[in-house]
Length: 179
Length: 179
DNA sequence: CCCATATGTTTCACGAGTAAAACACCTTCC
DNA sequence: GGAAGGTGTTTTACTCGTGAAACATATGGG
Image (cartoon, rainbow over all chains, first blue to last red; front, side, top):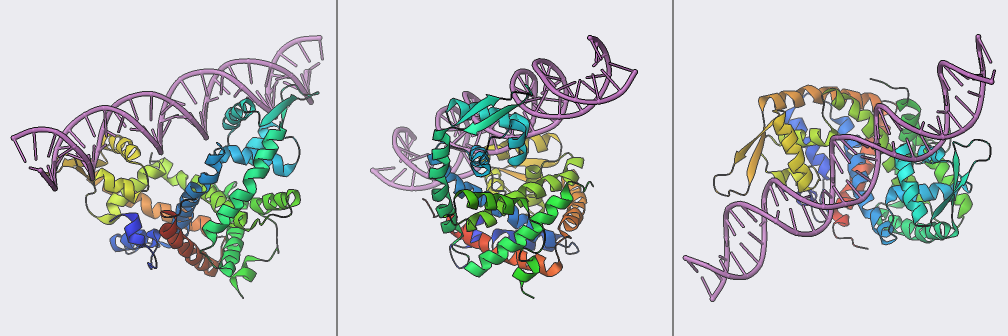
């Protein structure tokens, strides 16, 4: 049985994670499978949403990490160094270097040397880069709105609030938590 | 107390996504940033959780996709073909081929030819593979429980339910939705 | 002033995933 | 029976991300 069949075309009662959890409970009845129901679903939702989100971006020839980089420059409204971009987009410095090279070649960002510290450079959007971000963003948000529209508005608010709380605590914790 | 209240209507600090959304609203006041608050948080939570989850698995020398593959075999309780494993773990056939090669070399899974259809093979856990999964899973779940323990129990249940609803609809929809 | 160390960025070697082609085999229909 | 087309799996060529080392520069102590 495929995942899609398990979920049912429409009006099915279970998502795929529920089915997986049921299987685990049958095999290991003693285990507390509670965390799976949250973490498994978050992972699965992220995978599905990312796949869906990619559609509008791909039309513009951008990957999501590339868009995140451009978006960081756009939303902060000022230049950022490669290191700041790495922190802002939660990726490694090496990845940022590669993306910057690519985006520079495409004329979407520009670099400027720092006057005082010659190790650092400052990256900013070109006009073309800014226009691209501003053009894509509404399209992207509209698409995301459509994707989420299956969930009632109050459910969306609750979900956003709960995820916000979880995320806030994860971010506060996970840096320190070493097991 | 409702979930939204429990989650705190701007009671405490902000998570990173809230800060990002605020930046976007300052730059583009007209846009509906609602979807970001869900999708951005899901992605960020997934990234953080995955990083955290990896710790127990890495001790066993397994990546998460490898563990998912072994887990699919363990929880279904029977042999699966490479194609079924790909569907069950939501990954491409090529990726499953590579993982199977690796896991076979490590003696965690075995392959058996099909008697009727010589294209397909059947994959099953070895005893070592089964023991590894059974040994890791409780550790993994305990770790996940610890990671989630910052969230109150009712919040966890609500979050699981909301994510389940979202996931169920995404799975029903996204296959058909082509924008 | 110069060395030691810290910091910002890039390069390198590699691993892992993907789409598409290739391959192997099955099934159907004439 | 054999060509035509379908299905299950693997191979191929490629992209992208990563950690570690390399590189370039700054800074502070002796």
